[in-house]
Image (tube, rainbow, N blue to C red; front, side):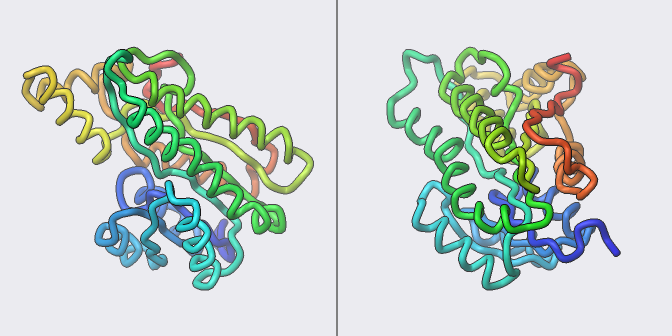
Length: 253
């Protein structure tokens, strides 16, 4: 019997990058998958590859989250594992960061995880091995120049994670977070394009600059993040809760 056979895992942002890598690993471990995301085509492609259910959803819309989680239950039963991966990134000098950019960042990176947990909580508490894993960032562990709104959203996410872990410590549900450095994903590709546009540097030079911000000098592979998330979802990880685990090539060592 596979480690997660019989479990239903819901992954937000499941159509690319870390979310897609997590979907592949959880599927290989036997989990039934519901994949949420804003872009239907890549979502359906990943769902078809792993045998999951694709559910288009903008997680920043609380009503849409309620509907999508209901569809996930109809397709795959009660939710045992919640992977909160959907997120956005941006950078700008603080003085030039608009209130609209601030509000959007917190809506997607902090309020949406709050809504997702509330939508899944009754299922997770009823499960024999409920699991919540937030995909945060090393930006949640320190100050980040030119990304105050992003860092604030991820630090808030870690506060949410730790508070939930403390509140539900006497249940069978665990709550953890992974904190990657710069990862080789489409989101990082967008960051490279923004840096190139704003700085006048080539995309190659802009990518090298991001790679250099990881102590290893390379981007983190999505599979490295996905493997840690899988580990946190296993029954044997029952006593790991409230942890913020860095996956950054030694950057925060």
